[in-house]
Image 1: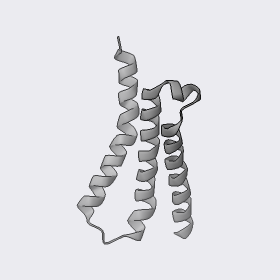
Image 2: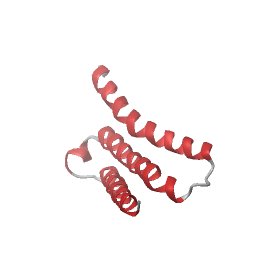
Image 3: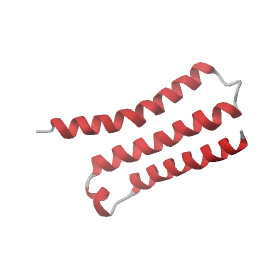
Image 4: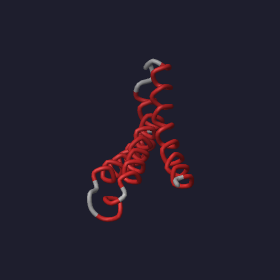
Length: 95
């Protein structure tokens, strides 16, 4: 169990840090394409939060309110999956 929590924390920290770095990048390819930068950064940061909540926080705080847990996990998962899907749809159907 402790090894899973350490691995989950490291994985979540890597994803969240990568997302925040993408969001704050101003130079290079991502600096020129603001919509891709915002979408990719938000998806990575939300994915990192989702991984942390599922793998670590659920085991630390077992008595937390279940509706609150489900709503927060669902919101992060929707951002993690929905933003890249929306970016693809916008890129495909953009005139």
